[in-house]
Image (tube, rainbow, N blue to C red; front, side):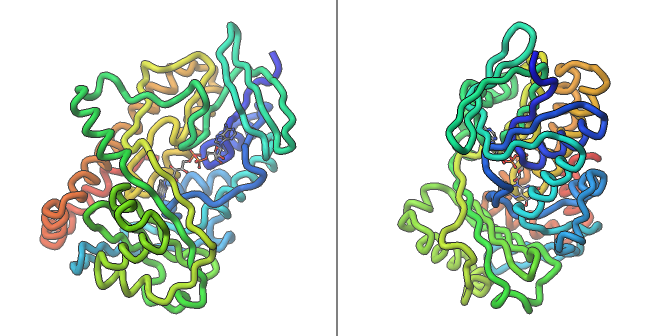
Length: 385
Ligand SMILES: Cc1cc2nc3c(=O)[nH]c(=O)nc-3n(C[C@H](O)[C@H](O)[C@H](O)COP(=O)(O)OP(=O)(O)OC[C@H]3O[C@@H](n4cnc5c(N)ncnc54)[C@H](O)[C@@H]3O)c2cc1C
């Protein structure tokens, strides 16, 4: 057998696994298809849980220029709700975060191969076979005892995520598919000049509207990240292009209009993603010897919860611990499922509630009257570290 352990994907899940295994003396190879860390569609919100794991992995958020976040502000049309966060969260671009984690993986001793795409993965008698192609088009084959699957939203051919079969009836599954796969996600960074002096530094803003939501928060060097999800039919109806969709977004409330006025985008086009399988939870029954699905390959929490990175890191550290203890992947998947079910399901329920005008109204009303209720509901969407 060739490699002992191969990690596919160099996002937070893959890099954290590489760091944890290398620190435990396991020789590990990480394969990442892109030639460098890169921007990804993300709100850039680093939850307190993610920050806790990152500190342990040697990532110093403050030194990287991350912005501390102490407040959250929600909008439902013209209605506004402010509350202080009971902890410090952070905001940092995914480029910087993913780059810092890859750097830590190399420092810990992992062999990091950037620009190498895994094209094929096959389970053979005593392990795994992989076919790869590097950025120069060179193809090669390798084998490994154990594979850590950390490809995020991307599906590896023949390893497509399957919904948890026992969880829902066919009708409910179709309903769920329609509701959660119909969205398209965008992200754009805006330049410092316009936003630098804005009064809502240290605040994450969430704008809720019919057909999606948008998140705005400050990032390093005074920039601002805008990420939003909207239903595909809305996107099509507003011309299917970026100016059209921004115009539509600015009409969702006077607050959003004000935010979007006079912006200088940093990129000529936004990043976009579609068909995100929100609510996905890998069933413990789908385990294969020597295969550890991590991060978004283990579970996909609705993004407004801002805990996807924490889940990626949690599963990475859990898998590394189980692997080095000599336990099998069944044990990993059982534990991962137990840890992830509650936050993913609660975030899904909350996302469903907030997707209705009446649900948003009721949520705002309850949160104003009983602020503790809001904290309790938010806490139930968090992964326990
Ligand atoms: C709209 C939106 C907003 C979000 N906002 C937040 C937020 O504010 N906070 C938060 O915590 N989470 C957020 N998330 C979720 C978060 O982005 C993900 O949960 C997180 O990135 C998962 O990490 P990962 O390592 O599993 O996957 P990724 O970060 O996606 O990394 C996967 C890596 O694998 C590589 N790869 C893929 N296929 C191959 C292959 N065949 N061979 C080699 N390499 C491969 C990719 O290039 C990539 O680098 C958001 C998600 C969306 C869609």
